[in-house]
Length: 294
Image (tube, one colour):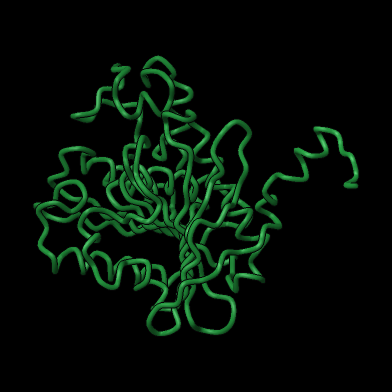
């Protein structure tokens, strides 16, 4: 006869293993020895869905530098495996290309604004870094050489992570057309509106919660010890004004932090309007930045 257990003991017994100790899923093999582990749980958040990441690993031996990729989607939607509309048709895809170049890539989930408000998504990115550091030997990655790379809303979160995460200090940040300021009117953004993606992220109109809006604005978090930034923004961006990228770069430069700014003439949000060759150049320049700083 099976041993009797209490409901509480049974609940613990049947629960999925904690992400810190859960076995890793089987890897999918790609050309050149690149491997991908998809749907790896990295955090159990009370009252929320389990948070997962996809991990792309290079074939090279030894601990690999790491890219922590943060997807866009106005903090409201989006998928962790999506670098933006202009890369969706690439074969091999952008993350496989980064792994083929010798980098590990962790594409992470975070709680969206319909699930939790700021600072929840930033806390999730910190949890991902903690998990990656905990499992680093097993994964063959070097968490001391981590660059965060984000696009759109993911660029905003990537900027905040780079500016606020101390242990370990990130090696760099690649920011594609990310919002940098949630406090100032920059058309089409109105800080007094309770219906903007920024307001949904904060839980109220930014002008109604000024301290929270400051805390969520990379422009307000700049300091001299920031890691190197590579900021890329379309000059014709109709969703996130190019002034975000310019002002962030100016603030970093004024603080004495290393930054490179590239603006793209004629490019709208998501690189819409840029030709394919220009998008490839942006990707290659971003990869070169990661290599340089890892």
